[in-house]
Length: 530
Image 1 (cartoon, rainbow, N blue to C red):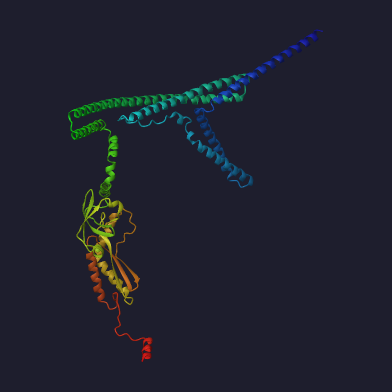
Image 2 (tube, helix red, strand yellow; image 1 turned 60 degrees about the vertical axis):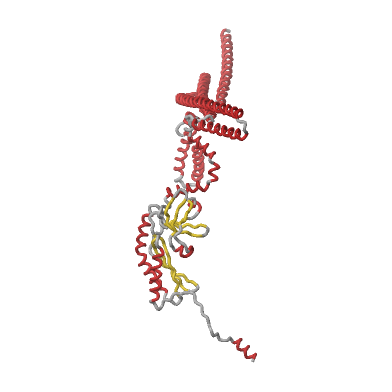
């Protein structure tokens, strides 16, 4: 009987304990669910936190780097295999490698630090130079912008404070869950949050120090700008007071002349004079008040002189052309130049370069011989021609020689080889000195220009023409005396050809038959008449 009693009692106690355990497990489950809900809520609140986003990108960047290293090793290993399965795997790994590289490229700004972009404050804009009342508005806008920048940075630190507090709260909740249901996964999450908190605490210390320096810099700048504003307000008040005094005196003067001058014409003239003096005094006051502001003065003078500049465009262009000529080094006094205007060329030597024009003394040249038939004139070239007209310089920098050419036409039955040899020898003999000068000049010119062809030896060509064979010889000659050498070579060629029996110079000819023989038709006609 006693045994049965103890057995029933034991079963009853076990049922009671099991019921209590079930109640305890249910309570733990409900508590864990509540804690997880809080953790989810915290995670949702931190979803758009810039600090957490930057840190997660940094972690992702490093994770992708590790994955890429593993993939690279597999790619190198599989690249040596030739079986079909390995090739398919190799192609898959190449695609994975490309995907990882692209993702790493997108996150490369997080390579060194997750917070450097957030912690580093924006560069302050250049402080406005408050030198006149119009700049006061810009100064106030600048102060407002500085305060907004400081508030924006302060908001970043507050966002970091919130993040740290939320992470601590999340860590505490995870620890409570671990106490209720200890497992490795919860412990890993707790350790990860602790690592993250260390990073965020270090970032907070750096951000707080940076903000302190940044805010002091902004406060100092704001004080400087406010001092400039105060100074300009006082100056504007004093200037306004002076102008007001001038206006009062003007009104008094007008009242006096109106009272004492009865003649209308004299009153009109006096009134105009007072107005002119009044405006002049106001302008002088303003000019002397802001004369140190060169930019402001240039702006005023720019508007005032706009009409003059348009009306005197050529005058200003001449001055600009003079600057180009003088500082560019294209022309200098003594150079021989050629300029063309309205279809007529003018060749001469520069004898003066002034602000408005280049003065040229015209010389006797091949141009004057062939086209102008005039020489010795003084030609004035406006300096603005350097922008609109082609001006040829025969003696630029070290050059003192130019190419000149002579054409001689011989008959088709002439010994053209002998003729070309004679012309070439004569040309070489007469131009030898100038060829050496030209070679030295071009050698010096290589330092300034890219010269491809520097051959200065005489050149000879032959061309087939309708009335004979034209031999063209080209040689170096003095830029200032080309006609002299041309004349000497021409005379020497004629003299040499005249000595040769098999060389005849071709020239236009006309044959006239004085007693023409009658044609067959004419003879038949005469016989029929008879």
